[in-house]
Amino acid sequence: MRVALFVTCLADAMFPDVGRATVAVLERLGVEVVFPPGQTCCGQMHVNTGYQRQAAKLVRNHVDAFEPYDYVVAPSGSCVGSVRHQHAMVARNVGDAGLADRAQSVATRTYELSEFLIDVLGVEDVGAAYPHRVTYHPTCHSLRMLRVGDKPLRLLRQVRGLDLVELPDADQCCGFGGTFAVKNADTSTAMLADKMRSVLSTRAEAVCAGDSSCLMHIGGGLSRLRTGVRPIHLAEILASTGSAG
Image (cartoon, rainbow, N blue to C red):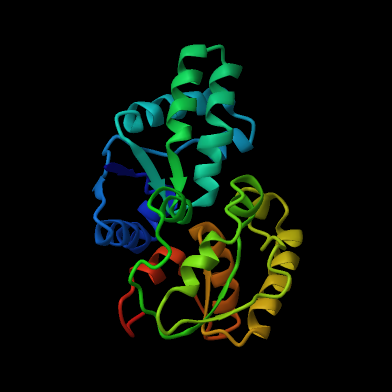
């Protein structure tokens, strides 16, 4: 089984440890991981702001990069959601039926990390250990678009030493939403305040999620308040095998 890592822009530019952790988990489970060097942005930001013709070029590049592989795995519900629900649509909207078919084929083989581990590999215990009190925030795209359900929680429950605490109002958006946080800063900040209040009520040492973008937003707020609660990606917990982290 050859799996291509779709690392995403944010992991590549700002959170490389998330990409490394994803590879570590997959390789521990015997998966051959390949990094297609031609990959770039998936175009989600362009689509969400109305630039579909520009996004079509990125869709074509994405398809060219990932088409040869059995599976594509990304540590991001948001970017996987874009591949599955936007790529073929964008290609159709610019009149490229051939690209739409190819994009749809790649989309059916593209998985968010927790989906791939449970639905494809059939694994819940990945051999991780993380002796800390953790709460989990289900990000909007993973929850509502991909419908990953309790898969991340099932993985976290198998992590040795981890004390998993339920997050109040877990299904409420953290307020990031990509360009939403820029265009609607006041609303975004108010939503973030509610999310941080919920996180702090758990007395968790760390807040976990499957999207670096949401963790950047939540973690930034928690850092500014000097709470001591650290953001950590699901992949990083699953890659951990001891007390470090």
